[in-house]
Image (cartoon, rainbow, N blue to C red; front, side, top):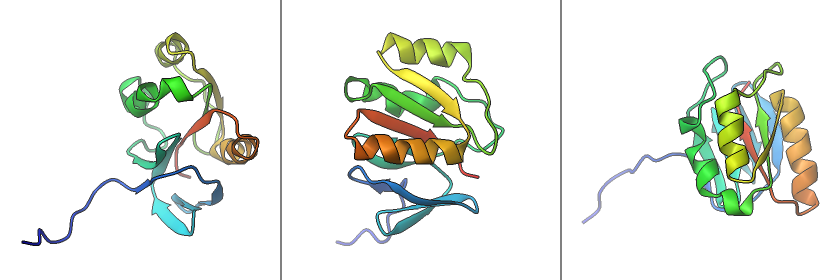
Length: 128
């Protein structure tokens, strides 16, 4: 028996470059998503974090779960560069992940380049 419409977090099962960003969302793989994104080895996932909200270890649990496949996490902090909190940097470093905060636009551009180079990169992108 059919269950009806099932609503779940946005997810694209694979790695894809980000084609565009702005107006509160992103375009990638012929799709669009409103809100923030986690671009991980397992795919592109919707992310609940909004600009101005604190980045926490709990908000990056999916990143930490895939740490064996990630060397660098690019963190798009929104319109402006903000530092990654010390406890978040420490949790990432403990899992062997280097982290680099930047504006979301810079993170998108850097992610696309590193992805094209087949690097072990992930991105946490706050929508702008």
